[in-house]
Image (cartoon, rainbow, N blue to C red; front, side, top):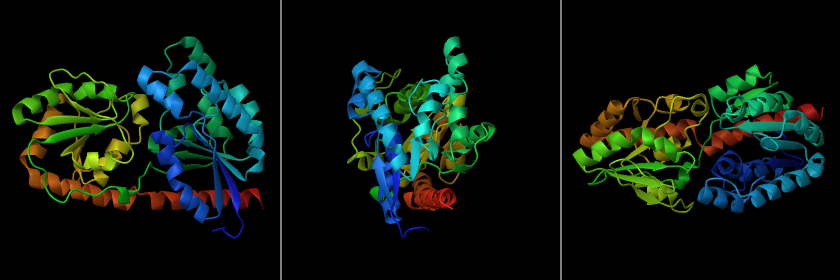
Length: 362
């Protein structure tokens, strides 16, 4: 590992540290990178004000978006001062690849990271004109990168098809030390929980009927963290605002953690992060058999459920067999420590960056 000289690493992230994708794909590794000899500079596209406006209004405010684009354009002239640039997904959303490629001339060496199937925002866009203009934009970004980091196999497959020179799979991971697993089986009433953002809360409608049914038959309560206002048929959820300091304790109060997803191309690109949060807290999981969920959830740690009947049966099994549910939760924590922790992902990142640095300076 090359550590004798300090090297400079620029992150062109999508969000600042308040944005979950950027926080867990980049910011949480800062201390590991710096210990390995990489001095980190973060230049986010969108700031906290943009995220707050988006969550409150359902979309970003024009002024926040304009300032974001200005920040990104202002950061590019300084990119050549760095030994390596890490780009999150794309330089500027909805900017055609021809223009983005011109701007990227200021970035001689870059690695691009994906934890979502963002390419489907373009090649499956509802407007034909945008599909025609942007359908291959992300393929172009992948093709031009020294390496593509993919959060799961579905994203890696797209990178290979785009002709990426090097593709590495690094799943989204977390710091397990932040989560204290439950030491005993929870009492009544059972709590079925979900954590996410308003943009993904719409998927809860898929399980509204089994949630209502289990609430009626077993007195289960539903807790949603970070969803914003949600209306579910025949069930009234307890809605909790997301808070970085309290989220681990809030998740540990769940008896079951859920992740419903539709089987769509976009959903297949999801990296299953909320499942990892449940597992870190020792909570058994129920999830749709879509994308990375199928890699993360195994019978020892949770249940994959497809139909409403499957979901209800999974809830019944876990609620009526609390000892088995507790064992699944502990097994989930063990699986997380073996495969999805920050330290392992950081080693993968640093090995890649050191390898590219040696190649660029040989």
